[in-house]
Image (cartoon, rainbow, N blue to C red; front, top):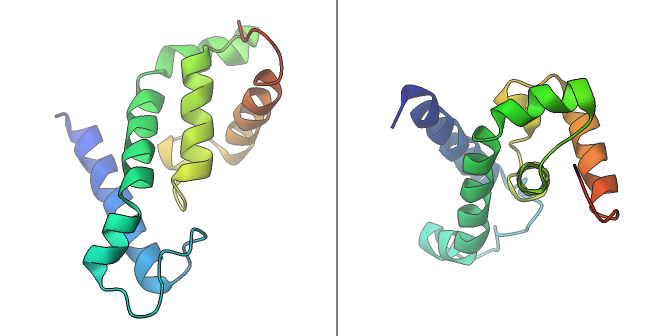
Amino acid sequence: MDLKNVFLLFVFTCLMAYATAAGENPNNINKPGQDLAARLDANAGQMEECWKGIQQLLSCNQWYIQFFISHKLSPECCGAIQTVSTKCWPIDLPSFGFFLVEGNILKAFCASATSSPTLN
């Protein structure tokens, strides 16, 4: 596994642990009386989906350059952007090197593209 992916996994794990400990997780997995194992079990599916979205997002690098030149983006990359944006709180696109404006443009494009029949 290359160093970039190891670092991203470490950052993701730390942010999820912080969000869980701080009680700020919008999915409300911090229920009174639940121990850590129960909270992790309750959120295991979302964490797996998030990790798959992160892996897909990292494999779409060539598409991002093409998007800002010709406004074309693969459906898989849009799916990854939406997954990371909605399932991976508090991680968002700026965590992957996008500026906030670029991330917002990509998210808006993918949100509007899901309602249209084709993306590219």
